[in-house]
Length: 423
Image (tube, rainbow, N blue to C red; front, side):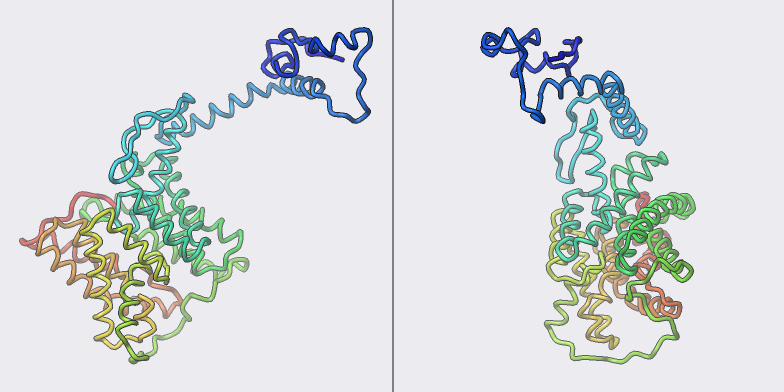
C-alpha cells in the first residue's frame, strides 16, 4: 500500500492517528497477523489510505490550502473596505447588547458580520423611524406572518441597499443606524407587490434597491441647504420608475394590483361603517406602512414600535385614528377604510412630526395630529392624480405633507426647527 511521503501535511495519512500510528505504519495487531504479505481488500472496497493520498495530491497539485486562505483574506478585505472590522479570524469582541441592539465596535470577521446584520435590522426599523434592531426584527417577523415572499423581498432590498452604501463609501454611522436600508426595504416589498414574482423581478429588486441608495445620497446633498429630511422619497421615485418601465419591457408583468389608468371617477360612500370596521381599519393603518393588510402583522408592528419608543407608538395610534376618522367624515368607502388605505400615510406623518424631527411637547403633538388630519386629503388628491397614469401614490402623501410642515416649522416661533438628522 502506498503512503504519502510528507507526514507533516495536515492532509497526510499520518496525521489521522485513529487510523494509523505516529509514523504512518499499520496498527501493530494487524501487522503481526499479516507481516509477510500485503493486506488484500475486496475489489471496489473503500480505502481510507487511498482517500488520504488523493486528498494530499489534490492539495499539492492545486494549492488548496493556499487558495482557501487567499479567498478568505480577500473576503475579509472586502468587509474591511465596507467599513466593517476586517479579518483576523478572531471571534467578535467589543460588541454588547443595548436597548436598541448591538453596540460597540466589533473586531474580526464575526464582528463584521454581526454589525452588518444589526445594520440591516436597523434599516428595517427605520421604515417607521426606529433606530432599533429589535423593532426591525419584529417588523420583519410581522411581514413574514402575512407573506414570507414579502419578508424575503424586504430583507433582500435592505441588505442590497445597505451593502451598496458600504461599497460606495457612505458615512459609517449613517449606515450603522440603518439610514440607507429602509428605502431598499420598501422598494423590495413594493416591486413584489405590484409586479408578478419571477426571477427578473428579483433582479429588479436588487437593482432598484441599489438605485435607492444612490438617490438617497443625491437627495441628501440637494436638501442639505433646506435642512429637510429625505424621508421615503427615494423609494417612491425608484418604485414609480420601475412600474412605468414595465410598459416597455415584455418580460416584466404587473401583478394586477396597479391602478387602472384613466380619469378619476367620483366616489361616494359605499358600505356600512361599523365599529368593527373602524377598529380593523385603525389597526391595519399601521400594517399598510409595510403593504400588509393583516391584523396580526399590524399588531406585531405596533409591538415593535412600543418596545422602541412609546412616544412613537402613541403618535402612530393617533395618526391612524385621525386619518381614519377624517376619511369616514369625508365619505370614503367602507372597504378602503377597513383596509387601512387612509391610515398609513397619517401614521408616518404623525411619527415624523410628533416623535422624530420636532422636540416633543404639546405644540409638537398638536402639530403632528394636524399633519395627520391633512394627510388623507393629500392622499386622495395624489391617488386621483397618479391613478390617471395607472400608478399608485404609496407614501408620496406622507412625504409631501411632512416636507411642507417641516419647512413651515422653521419659521413658526412656537416650534423648533427640524433636528439635523439626515434621513
